[in-house]
Image 1: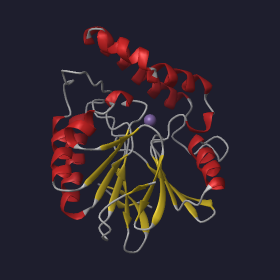
Image 2: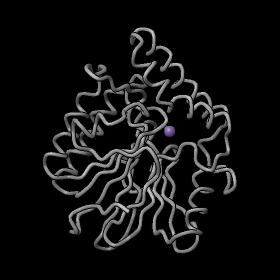
Image 3: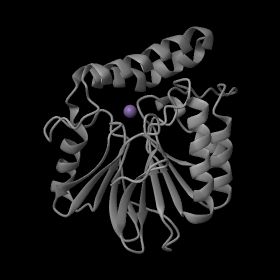
Length: 260
Ligand SMILES: [Mn+2]
């Protein structure tokens, strides 16, 4: 279990699925995200970025892909000012690898992880491939997470590989639309819920915080545990904020205020 923060009462932020690089308003979304993180710098002790922050990324040994410089700079500022950054790799930006660890000191995770924040136990992750309800997705995830395929990808010219990656990203989006999956699908069809309930049988957890579903949600899971989905920073401008002083975890929209 990873202990988070400085033991003080300052809040912790969670957000996911900005899919920067996707859509005509990407730069505007990036600026708004930087504004939120700028406010967080003086106010929060840690920020959790729960996956698919970038719509696509590939970390090369010697060169850096174009784009996202505002966010990368802001993350570096945050980290330098002492705010802990916890970065989860999503299914769109799984090839970030250790880039943010090295550049901005962000602790990076590729699987769900348990954290102790203000004395409460948090199970945190992106949320893709959990519950193993979609075998096709599981297979493709395995293909893209294979070290061999990653080395092959790195060795090929980006003019060839980036269009392939773009298609994988678009295919993921089509899958979302086809399944009309922006709505809660039911307890037995929500992979994150299936997974969290299994984890809850083995150990006590106070909060399960995930992204990936693009649907902001607060829901009791039983056993005193609350499931929070951070929605997105793509259609919404959603984030969750946990206050260790009064042990509340609330959902907000940066433009609309509190939503849950
Ligand atoms: Mn995702």
